Amino acid sequence: MKTSGHKKSPSGRLPSQVRRARVLVAGDVMLDRYWFGEVSRISPEAPVPVVKVDRVEERPGGAANVARNVAALSAKASLLSVVGRDEAGRRLRQLLKRDRVISSLHDDPTISTTVKLRVIGRRQQLLRADFETPPSHEVLASKLKDFQRLLKSCDVVILSDYGKGGLAHIARMITLARRHNKPVLVDPKGEDYSRYRGATLVTPNRAELQAVVGGWSSETALTTKAQNLRQRLGINAILVTRSEEGMTLYRRGSRLHVPAQAREVYDVSGAGDTVIATIAVMLAAGQDLENAVRIANRAAGIVVGKFGTAVVRPDELFPPAQGE
Image (cartoon, rainbow, N blue to C red; front, top):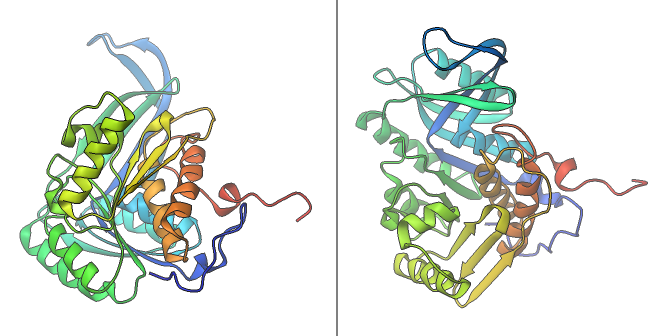
């Protein structure tokens, strides 16, 4: 991680080192499809609305959206994952190339690329259909070899776990990355956090943390539970994203709470991707963790005002001052 000799970013200015920052993202990728249309009647076949589709959008999702967010901030994004040998996998490659993501996608002919199809009518999601198959063991083993190779040319590693089976070797990946002195940021899934042992930073949202440590009735109780989890798993820091409450960073002997940016929330899907991508880019650019979290909180406040999986651009995150 590039930290020595770099000062904190001045307020309102993108760190100059960002363009040299190199982030490796590994995890579960998917293709997000949106069908937009008008709803004018109820189906005669069942009590459901009929959507006349007039527009289709496709965006990289999951770990691919994380990598896309890294690239959008002008950093170098490399992506390692598994897709099926199908139309959705080919489309995902095209979208990632458009978004300037250097992708290393392993083909697994035995699976279908994960697709999340959302049907939107009257500005509301009416239906989501998921298509997914876990990748084969052989393909995951070959992906691990590529991970070892790609580690040498990155500054920070993001492991984006969506529970689709692409990170079956995550414990080994964390060990390898730390052995190469690379910070490892994990976006977790599920209730077994022991697989994230030794990570630099884990970023659960409020509901995800509650599923692991149970509920809390006060900030003191939350701090105790988060710190106990962090210490038990040998994790340097835990960042809990708390929606309208902002986000809270727990490190050894310290707690930092950053209030949410006050703005209209349109869509929270993909906000966690933006947060972890922004932190990784800022760490790779030489910022300290506290400053990276503050900048990521600003990015989250921007992206929730957009529809679907989206990105934040440097001019949105650091708008130029008048007269520049």
